[in-house]
Amino acid sequence: MKIAVVGTGYVGLVTGTCFAETGNEVICVDIDQKKVDKLTNGEITIYEPGLEKLFLRNLKEGRLKFTTDLAAGIEEAKIVFLALPTPPGEDGSADLKYVLGVADHIGRLLTDYKVLVDKSTVPVGTAEKVYESVARNAKVPFDVVSNPEFLREGVAVDDFMKPDRVVIGTSSDRARKLMGELYAPFVRSGNPVIYMDERSAELTKYAANSFLATKISFMNEIAQLCEKLDADVDMVRLGIGSDDRIGKRFLFPGIGYGGSCFPKDVQALAKSSDEAGYDFRILDAVMQVNEIQKLHLLPKILRYFSGNLQGRHFALWGLAFKPNTDDIREAPALYIIDALLEAGATVTAFDPEAMKNVQQVVGDKIKFAENQYEALKGADALIIATEWNEFRTPDFLKIVSNLKKKVIFDGRNLFDIRAIGELGFHYESIGRRPVNQPTAVIA
Ligand code: UDX
Picture (cartoon, rainbow, N blue to C red):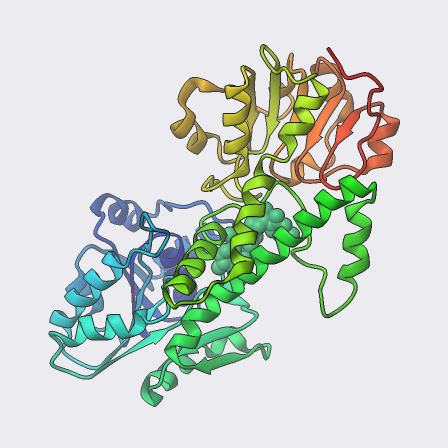
């Protein structure tokens, strides 16, 4: 099938590449000439494991093309995906100017029936707005479908190729048939394509992300309570997670959720809910808990250093909001850096992928190390903010020889408490008992 994808950001590029992979002819459209040139020349513009290989193969075989020309891009396409940014406006609601701008333009260009698909995360009612924007100028029939994506950064290719489900929101049989054909190769294993109306599809995306964020904030509160009640959150997590109704996944406490989706989507759903005249109380609590959780390590660090971080030096492992990405949007590490600097401390950080991005934000306010051990040199303590695999089983001898003292504050619960205790570390994590707590705090 011939398809077009408008917007070559994260979602657009993954979508275009994965549709090309199943034999479709895909043209991706973007207004950014430099980006289009790069992509046309085989230079991938985002970091996503597994994507580059697929991207290069489909580019080489001519199934994946890039252009800045919207008219040429959509001319032969049966289905046109809109994968455009919907940044939060000042009031937290999603800004639709890019989506509606392109919809208006497409309306002027349509010469035959096409299905336009909202892939961006958009508030309930957007499909209707897109329809109106296109209809203002369109002289031929068309349909608008809401088809939210549920991709996780780091495993987006897998999520796209083998989705748990595909949600297609449309009231048109013609569009439904075409979308069903397009997605058939992706659901061979029997996972469902769920057809529904446009509004329900739009809400499904927000509900899914908000529910997952709620699960995380709930566990983060249980972790806080564990610390107060001298219980171990890992035990509680295993205890509740083996109940199928609760499930094992997304129960890991930490220093809060970040990224491009959860913070933005929870906020946008709260806002939509407000506008609809409903006070969605749980969402407010989810956001509040997450704000607190990002800095949950700070009181522990302060307590250990007798309330004074002036002149202290910290090693920070992990900057990305989660492993396998260079994305630092809403990353808890950034909040920790700010708090440490404000308290008069200095920081040397290491992250396998995200250092360049952080450098653009913080400049020379912190130092960056070549590898995880170099970051430790002369530091009073190690702080862990992202659970990269290479941090999970480090060479503890190297840690000991580089750190000034054996002190670790772990925001992702990476280490086994007993093992690290035997190595003589003072170790504090989230919702678990501190290890080798000094009787008197360090001066
Ligand atoms: C998320 C959704 O999972 C995806 O379906 C949607 O399309 C986009 O948003 P993503 O932001 O890539 O994907 O990351 P995800 O792996 O879901 O993690 C989100 C955040 O939650 C991260 O900050 C992660 O550290 C945190 N998290 C996740 C926890 O703190 N605990 C957990 O148990 C799981």
